[in-house]
Length: 350
Ligand code: ADP
Image 1: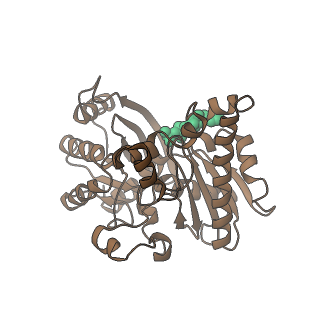
Image 2: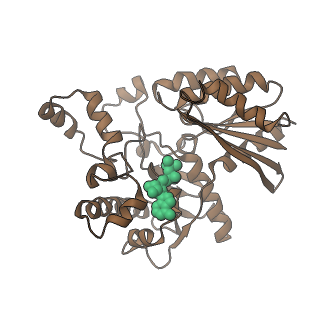
Image 3: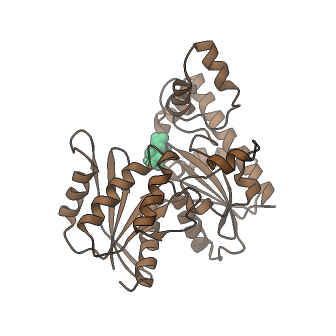
């Protein structure tokens, strides 16, 4: 079955084309339509460019959708109800869901006779225990506004969990894993018996680990304090926490880990930024090991997690027991999306 996977961001669409037959998975093509809004007018034109390049032979399409809100616990065949739900969750993911919607609508128009499947970043976290996904604020805010921990990067965490189970030759059922997705955005998830039981990103991707430009966890009282002291509004503070904090904010140099690793010997603030980054990960590993009563393997993925053994050794030092395996596994969210799309299309008889 020839499966096209479309991963839409605000200014680019990544694609991969797979041929999947049972356990055989072949990558046929991959690419990127970028600079949407500049070189390419809009997502509509980007989809057309990709489909013209690939040609007509596609059996099913898998779409990455960031936010499935409190509706989707797994990947699903797209119909008008699913589209309506993704539209409803634009409020929760104003930057992420609209590009997916543009791409879904355009590609369904052109490839109308084949199944299109939505794979949600949040779905892996749908079944977390209530005590892990609820915040200790008045319960009415959950009821009125759906304020809860949603978690993100779920497709990546699910993919590397499955790969770890294959590598360890042990079924997911019975494994306690901690998966660390360390890229520009960073998140860490506790996976017990194949299910996410807790994760560091929250209502939005801002919570949790220190990231390239995001602060991760902070005391929320800092927000009104800075607003008052700097005489700035809430939008400016939220922008600062998302775009000017994290590794970039502390180092004052860059959010790029490669550059930071090079500069850490001669620049104190760079060293400090890395120390905070590492310390935060250690704390989460300790916490998740505690709530799972142990950990069989820690998996590192994402641009930083896949390429940086010295940093990973530093993270694991002192917090990982000798029984815990450490694995570096390249993520492949598109392959995970293709696998889900294959399963759903096959059940439908395509
Ligand atoms: P995104 O979250 O945007 O997909 P990536 O997963 O590509 O980002 O990760 C980007 C980060 O990975 C950057 O900080 C980059 O410096 C880092 N990175 C990429 N390759 C290496 C490497 N060989 N060594 C250390 N860090 C790396």
